[in-house]
Length: 253
Image (cartoon, rainbow, N blue to C red; front, side, top):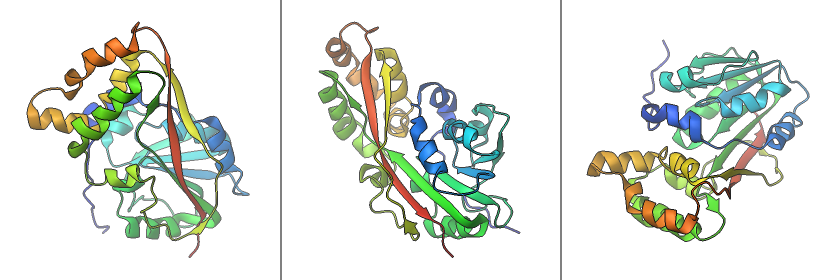
C-alpha cells in the first residue's frame, strides 16, 4: 500500500478566487516545452491547481493528466476534452510506469518532497521525457503603485509566507534538480488589469490568508487607500508582469 504523504494546503479555502484571479501563462512557453520531445502522447501537469497550465498544454498533447492533492482545486478546474483531472499527490501519482512524455510543475515544486517526487518522475517518464518546473514570485506593475506593492510584499506580509516561499523568492535556484539541464529562453506572464483585478489577485496569496487568520483583520486594508490614490481611476488598466523562473531537463535514470 502506498504511503500517504500529507500536503500543506494553503489554497483550497480560496480556490474559487484562485481560479478567477490567477494570471495566465504565455502560450509560447507550452510550444517551447512541447518542442523538447519527439512524442506528444501524454503530458502530466503535476500540482495542477485549477488547471491553468493544463489548458495551456492541451493543444500540444493527445492527453493531459492533471493531478493535485486538493479536491477543492480539482473541482474548480477548467474542463477540457483532452484533460483528465485526478486527486493525487506529486509523490504518488497513480500513473503507469514509463507512460509520460512531458512533466510540468507550475508554481508547485517548492511544496513537494523533492527526492520522492524525482523518484516518481523517473518511474513514470518515457525515455526522452522532459521535466519542467516553473515559478513566479513578486509581481511587477507599472507606475506609482509599484512602491506600495513592494512594501506590502516585503514588510507587511513578509513573515506570514510559508517557509517554502524562500524557493520562489530565490527563483528556484536553491532547489535540487538532478536531471540534464535544458536552458529555456526567457518567459514572463503579463496582464493588463484594473485595480479590482489586482486586489483580487493579492487576496489569493497564502500570506494574506495567514495574516487574516493570525490577526483577525485584512492586511490589504493597510494599503488599499494608498494604492487607490496611486492607481488613479480604478477602471484604468496597468501592465502587470511576472518573470518566470524555469528549471528544465531531460529525465534520466
